[in-house]
Image (tube, rainbow, N blue to C red; front, side):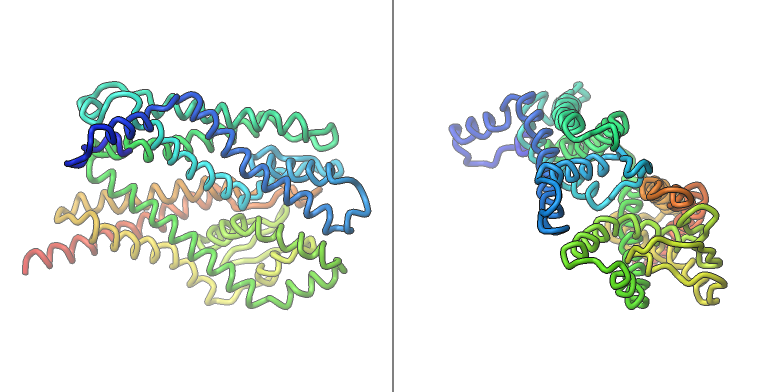
Length: 416
């Protein structure tokens, strides 16, 4: 990005030449290494976790370290949407904790790659004048190919006829992860994003900023509600652990699995707060207005579920959390960063922020569910379409009210 900015006064010519050369290293080599490094970093963590898990299970009395490595590799593939067969049962749920870790690594290395290749292509003035620049697109494609190469090798070495992870789904997730997260990071790191977004209307930028902040804060609120529900019935989670009669090592593995699934549970919690709720098995419902549960597997995180049967009246008040969060976040964003005195523009920004957040949350909710076992447990997850409709209404109304309130306060402040 520094190569797209004006050089500071007093900089020596030799320093400028060295800095420019540092940002003109071979794009193909850097992008390919960054893609393979991003995939390899999380893969090594999963492999190490698999070996540790193999040892903790029974102190290595059964199997061999390669079995732990295979389990770790399969876990990495599952984090990329591959799915896997376990004892003949197709498990398609994605451990979003691992997926989130992969996204963070891709983002960090994408930023560094963007800075390294920022000297390629036209300079900032030429880009601003409309000259075509393929630097970000080229780097993103090569980055994705490097990541996909690691995925292909991992799938070839770890898959067996019994587990049968899907290569197509893995590559699809890889393209989305590297294209959306990695491509955005490369654009930001290279300085192109700042130039391109400057051409967007102010309303679009304000709505996008509001949507992102609503999403972040709503996920935080959902996590707090999940933590509170688990704390209230902590004895239930402890009771589940005691009934499983696990060894200390196996209990540690089970807790680690729960941690990896916390993002999934958080999105379940957010779907619950919006009203539609989610299913924990076929023909079940968990929502603020009704809870219908059947037999459940013994898993500690399920202790956070409300009791089966009629719900207390106060739970319906939780439906107000989503619009309140949206109103507060949009009000703060619009008043501090994107103030306006026009009512129509304020309404457009607020509704746009709410709509963007609703779509993003519905997509995340769709990724959080899947099959986790045989029979009725093949249907676990939020009711995505209903979540989308409720989110549009809740975040849209909240964003509209927050933006209008920010505009009213700004107009009042400018008038005095």
